[in-house]
Image (cartoon, rainbow, N blue to C red; front, side, top):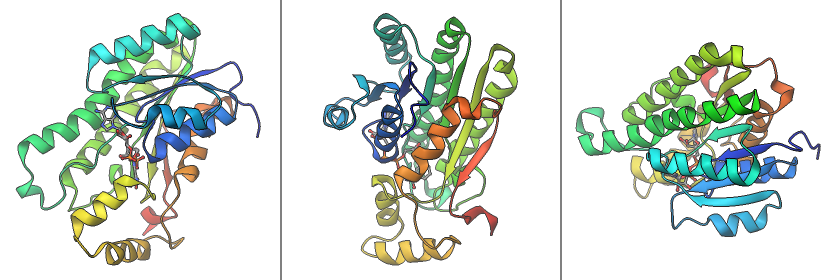
Length: 255
Ligand SMILES: NC(=O)c1ccc[n+]([C@@H]2O[C@H](COP(=O)([O-])OP(=O)(O)OC[C@H]3O[C@@H](n4cnc5c(N)ncnc54)[C@H](O)[C@@H]3O)[C@@H](O)[C@H]2O)c1
């Protein structure tokens, strides 16, 4: 594997989850020093042991500004700063009709998926300025570019992530800071299993089959396939790519 990230430091949030873990492994495999973060109690250390380049792990709630400040301060002290931030942490939010979604569940998915990304951007910009450049990759979703009636609050958060991405790209490009969003279709992780169950308990296989019919490539994607695009966007191979919205969706959004 090429070493596109030799000498680079990357922070990956939600690193113990499906796509986060694949991203950590991919970036570390390409030579990055990866600072992997996730909520306390997740399988962070076990994940770090499987990926050689992981230099540190931290318990980190992305909705907490104090946590973001601690992570960035740690990165500065221990590794001299950061070059890439992958805002990956996310939750699916309430499943079902929009008019029945509990307010608290709406607030929570907004806090994790939108405020968490906003705080990450806010924490990373000063760190990137010290390096003279930086790259942010935000995890949006196909739900950031199309509507999905059964996950309306999630859809709202992922549209917001795209808005934040475009704002960073237009506002900070002059400082050498790039931002891009990745929009996966269904990917085989805990989140999709939870969505299948939430949509039709006991009928998960039917839900999956219906979703796969909407995907020209005829299958869910893998976390590794998403991580490959994240790695491209975070790398210098994408040095002229900013504000882009990359669907990784087997063609799903072309219907
Ligand atoms: N799996 C899919 O089909 C799919 C499709 C499109 C987009 N995405 C997006 O990709 C990202 C990763 O999803 P995944 O499928 O790997 O899900 P996952 O559930 O496997 O992983 C998500 C991770 O985020 C962490 N997390 C949740 N709340 C957090 C918080 N407050 N602070 C820090 N970490 C927190 C979880 O602990 C978990 O490890 C999410 O942003 C998701 O919306 C996933």
